[in-house]
Amino acid sequence: MNGAKHRFALGLTCFFLIGITVVYPFLLYTPNAFVTRWREWYIETAMGTMTHQWLATWFIPENIINEVMTKRYLMNQKQEGIVSNWDGAWEEKEEDTAETPKDKFYAMFSELDENEFERFLADNPEYLENGYDEINIDLIGEPSQTHYDTGLKTKQGDTVLAVNAAHGILIVEQTGEDTLGMEYAGKVALCKKPENIYVGTSEGLGDYGSFVSDMVRDYDAILGINASGFADFDGNGTGGTVYGFLKSQGEKYQDAVGNGWKIIGFDNEDHLQVGAFNDTSSLRDAVEFHPALIINGENLVAGTGLNEQQPRTAIGQAKDGTVIMMVVDGRQMHSFGISIERCGEIMEQYGAYQASMLDGGSSSVMVYRGREITSPTTLSQNEEGRYLPDAFLVK
Image (tube, rainbow, N blue to C red; front, side, top):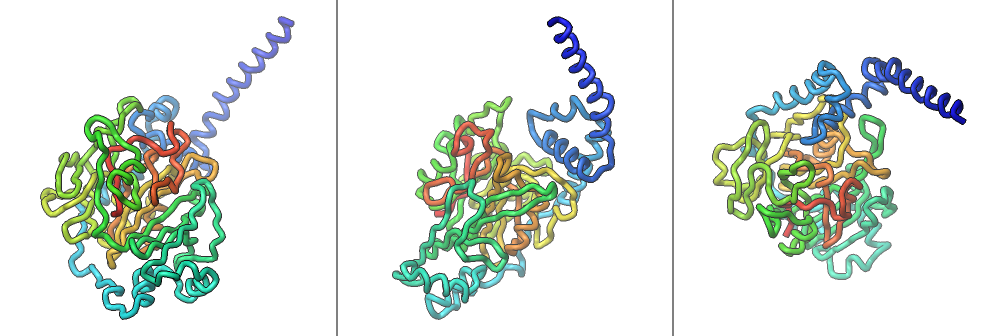
């Protein structure tokens, strides 16, 4: 019996030594494309956290970490000093000149194919009982369900999940494969009335946070996504201490931290502004995060080669005023996550002229009509995500 235990222990020791002398160096230094992508993903993920960088620094040589993180440094350098400028870019809304409710509907939701949508209405006449300006379609299933069969697609090729004409909201499914060949799934909400978008804060701001669903309810909003990051001491933050600039409905709660972070919010003319602004008096609702995705029509994250796939939240605005809110699930079986570079591509597909990342990870969540329609990461302690200091809400 003792001999068997000895042989087992010897086998484990040999296995460990083989791992140290063969497998470990292979994973660190091989130029194999597949291994390289996963190695870079691991380093980017660990170094992108506030409290878990040791997952990389304990096991991986500094020169390898620096080589990977140089990509992020170069991305940040490209964004230095750049700010939004809407001069001459703002376009007149076509629905303002449309003559009939039907024309106004298709001008507002220009992402819809009119012929396809008319066929859908012919098959489902109940949605048109109160006219085009009262169309209210909600076909959203469980967040972890990645395939829907509504028969409706946007011109960009995404499945239509909800159309709310009264509130000017179109929600689509967003799925695909990112750089690692892993699937992702999330939602994109296209909000046609930027004047109805603002920053709501948690009830206990400064002391404790709230779920986004709670803020949606407290502000009587119809839709909401998470916004700011927050102080998260040793992973035990209450979500009440916001990190960075915060202004809600004209009231400023906190100054900017700067250091490459961007102020992201709406001015008094309902334009989404992104940048490091010295004068924030014209902003009515804003938070601070990074990096910017698109500034003045230029995609600042294209070609970065960053592989880090995570749960993500982003916000952007097209030239016609459409606000693009995106939340992608991550760290789950149905959705591995999405890279920053892919976030920029999706924003481009929907015409974003300005766009930026918001807080991600286990904070990422979208709430529509009182329920979570995305799935916060399984690392969260609650199905509703984390307690957060604020959210972008739609009245």
